[in-house]
Length: 273
Image 1: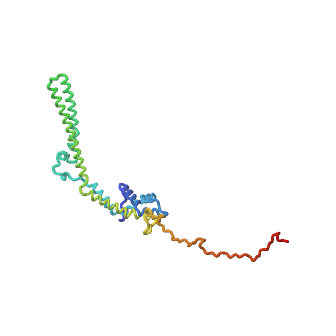
Image 2: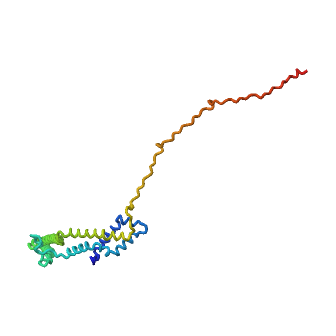
């Protein structure tokens, strides 16, 4: 499409919601953690500034969506002959040119006139009864006043019911049957195309490339070393040396011999002559 349609003002909030979703995509979050990458706010500002250029990637879906929406808005209401069979008193009293008709006027005027008449009749009737309790006219005026009051209440109830039914009927005829699902499908297709072909590629072009197989920055998984309790650790098999007591060791006794001395012969003094 050589001249893609600009993004309408009423669709700008939808564009901003899609931008927020795209900024939360796991591939975008992974690229945002790369060194030297733009911040989320910087990306958002750029994407809002280039909204028309980004939306051009989904120009076909957007054109279909906006045309269908405009067609539904400009579709005239169904002709009078298309109204339901036996529409009842509400439809019969509507004017031919689509105006308010006689029925709404009656629903407003009848209670007001009835209550005004009831007030006058009751006031005159009770005044006459106070002056002459046996006066027949006084009793008739009081009775007529209460009847007029009841008629005003009934007219007000009928008017309220009629207005509710008219609102329900007009609300149901606001859009042709079967067109809302088609509009919803067109809107969904535009949203998908704008996100996949417009927003995500634009964000990735302004972020560092993420190498294939790079981790998605989930919580790191650590495994603790395999420690064992001190109890089952095997001990070394040592054998004590074969010691014997000193008494059992056959050590040869030293052979000491006296030196070859001869003791001198001493004589006692008695032997000296």
